[in-house]
Length: 111
Figure 1 (cartoon, rainbow, N blue to C red):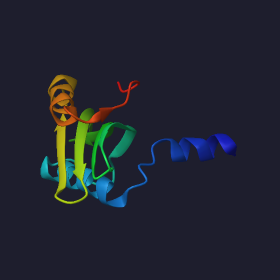
Figure 2: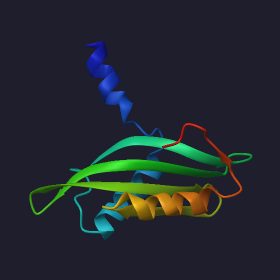
Figure 3: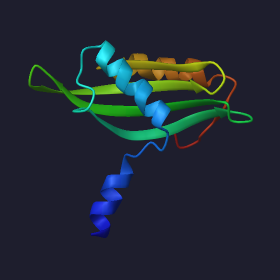
């Protein structure tokens, strides 16, 4: 029972608006909204006092019945909105994370 609970909470973002922004971007790229699983979400950078947060994540989804893994980054600014980057290639996402994280407080253990 504890294992099931931990598995359920492992990929919980804790921010409904952030999750909606990611799911909206999935739809914009013609991926299913609800059949996509957001995994390994991790905050990688933050700006004091916390208005700007940069996250990375992975999405397990499908297109035309074929499994697809997407890599993603989010820049969430509580004052000005949210930007989402999705790609099947992790390199452009890593570059975008570096750009969005510049000048912010960066987590040392970020992937």
